[in-house]
Image (cartoon, rainbow, N blue to C red; front, side, top):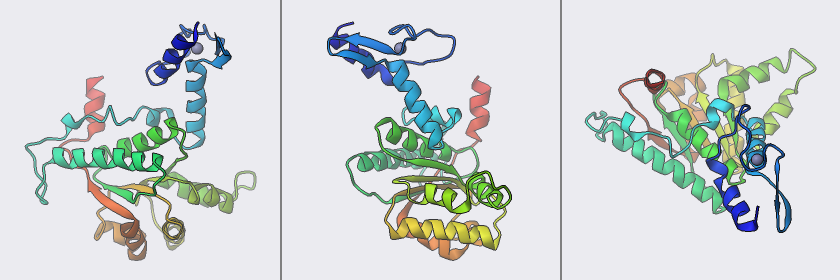
Length: 259
Ligand SMILES: [Zn+2]
């Protein structure tokens, strides 16, 4: 394979789907391509390295599928309006645009304000949060995706079992991430202890001006304040812009029916 076709091949990084049954058409599963400049890693090898890296950063195979390109605006009715005025479609368009802009700004070396996505279960919040994470990692930037209820459980269990990571290790891994995505904030039984942990985490992010993306089913100023506490919500409002996502149905049901 000459150099040009190797480059073309590498540029196909995002479109080649690798799975266990398919032999790679380029390297026939050797993982390497021979070019004029020597051996280079084949697209399939680079893809699997990215997937491995994503797994470490909290992106599961299900989350890996979410991109900006497959966020389907047709699921957001343009004939339905919120109490706030704009249509569901317009709110979704704005959320998508803000997500892309956030990722672009990080890649330009800026520290953009974070985003708080608010909407009921299955309205596309996690899709956009994962799409931001995927876009950043695909472009070589660090971002960590954290499912908040799992994070809080891990903290709790860190006291019960000695062999797994200690509480301070778990917190350190998350709090200093260059970009942190906190998915499903508020979906947990929040005790004073868990409220304190979330406050400390968000206060750290705010103090060090570290960009943070948050998704929640709960409205700030109402239920969210009751569940995680007003002072934590005030930190979030200080560092994040608010975006709502509404749709008529749970999009996950719709997607299931399409299959
Ligand atoms: Zn290959």
